[in-house]
Image (spheres, rainbow, N blue to C red):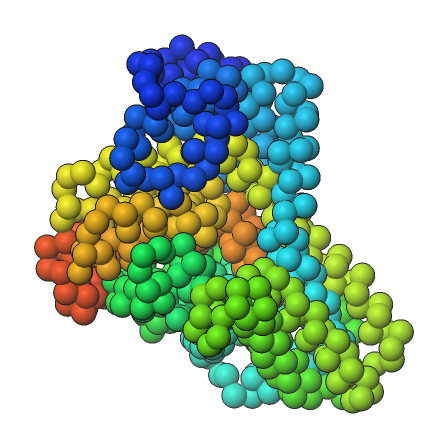
Length: 569
C-alpha cells in the first residue's frame, strides 16, 4: 500500500506529458473552463449535433489546460480501480474507498496538499452527503433499519421463521423461497435487498445456508428483477433518460434481449436444482453446513442477539411488509404526479423521483407500522421509540460505505471518467454494427464496475446508444445490452450501492459477498456476451434467449464436473 502514491505520481507525470492532445484553434474554442464544463456536462444533449467532435475536443483541451491534465482520459478511472483492487486484496473496504478518494483528489488538485484536502471534503464527502438524491436514499435506509428492528421486537420475524421452518424442509427450498420473495418485491432494489434479507435470514440460517449465499440470492433478485419489471424505480429511471422515444414502450420491448438479468434468474434456478457451488462460495457453503454461517469477518455480529415478543405472529411481519410496499409505490407515484404533473400511473412512474418517493413512503409506512404494533400491544411506546437509534446504528456500516462510494464516484466524475467511457462507445458505433450489442455490453460493464453506479452508467450511455440512429431489432439489442452491462458491472463492483445493500440485508461481510459473488456474475456475463454476439446475427430475441439458457446450463454442468474431479483428486 505504501507504493501506491509514488506509482500514482509517476502515472500523473506521464499523463501530463502525453495524455493531452494538441487541438488546432477553431471557432469551437471556449473562453473559460466554466463554459467548457457547461458543454461537457450536457454531453448527452449535444452528442450528434453538428461539429460535436471538434467542440468536445476543444472543451476538453480547455479543462485539461486550466484544471487537470488527466480529465476524460483513462487515468480518470484510476481512483476507482485503486479502491476496487485494494478492497479485494486487503479485505478492508473503508480504507480502500478512502484511498481511492484520496488518489482522485490528488489528481484533481495537482498534488497540492491543501487543495487535495478541500477537494476530498467539498467535492467528495460533503457533496455526497448533501446531494438530495443521496439524502433521500439514506433516509429510506435508516427507516428500513428501524422497521426491521420493530419487526424483530414484535416477534414477527421469529414467528415467520418458525412458520417457514415447518414448511420449508430443504436447503434448496429455502433458497427458492428467498428467490421467490425477491421476485415479488420488484418495485425497488434497495427495498428488495433490505426486506428480503430481514425476512429470510432466520430461515436460511436454520437451513445452514451461508450469509454469503444469502447475499448473492438477494443481489441476484434485486437489480436484475427491477431491470425487467416495467413498474419499478429502475424502469422509471430508464424511461427518464431516453429522449425522442416512448421510454416505457422501448423498455418493455427490450426486456427479452436483457440477457444478463434473465440469465441471472436462470442461474439461481439451475444452481438450486443442481445443488452445487463453485469458487469461494463453495467454501462458505461447506462451512455453513458445519455451523459457521459467516466464514469471514462478522460486522453485524452484535445485531444477532435481539429480544423479541414471544407472542409475535406471522401477520406481524407480513402486514408491515405490505404497508411498506404500498406506501413506497404510493410515494413514487405521488412524486410523479405532484412534481411532474403526470396524469396516469405509467407516466407517474416514468416521471417520478424514486429517492424522494421511497423516503416519503417509508416514513409514512413507519408511522403506520408503529401505530399497528401499539394497537397489537407488541411493545410499549417507549420501546418503539428506542428502536429509532437502534435501527440507525444497525445501518451505520452500510451508510459509511455508501457515502464513501458516492464520494469516490464524485471524484471520478470530476476527473471526466464518464466522458471518457462515453467517447469509447461513440467511437465503437462507427463500425462493426452487428457486434455493437456485445461491445456496448462490455463497455457498460466496465463503466458501471469502475464508477459503482448502474444508473449513472445507463444515464450516460443510453442517450448515446439511442442517438446513433439504429432502429428495429438492433436498437432494442443495443439498449438492452447497455442496461444489462450496467447491472452486471454494478453487481460485480464492491463500491456499488446495490451490492452494499445486499451485504447489509444479509448481514454479511461486504468483501466476502463481493468475492463469492464475482465468479457467478462473471459466468453469466460470459454467456450473455456470447448471446449478444449471436444476437447481432440472428436478431430474434427468443431464439437468442433459448440458446443462451442452454449454453448457461451446459457451462454449469462442465463446471460441476470439473469441481467434482478436482475434489476427487
